[in-house]
Image (cartoon, rainbow, N blue to C red; front, side, top):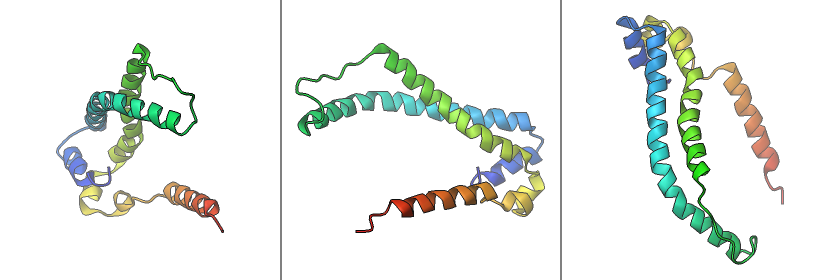
Length: 137
């Protein structure tokens, strides 16, 4: 959203409502989720075969284990692929819709602030976790 701030501000400046902005962004996310799902499901089949081979060759799975394709996997894949993308963009779309158009065009005020306090805190927590996981040997 931060990269598209100017475009979204122009849409708002020319009369676009918050609802229209939400629909645009959620629609784009759903389309990209559908494209990703359509590409990911066929690519997942050879990955599944490779994973089975790898697990049996490392001795993690017993010999003779066969990966099976089940029809419900397709439904779950489509649901997750098309459901997660719009859900993820909803929070960013709300934030983008709250920015006043002139602020976003000037890159001042609240619109210029990309790193919020919660993002700094989350980043610090994950950085501390990464440091704690380092091998001290």
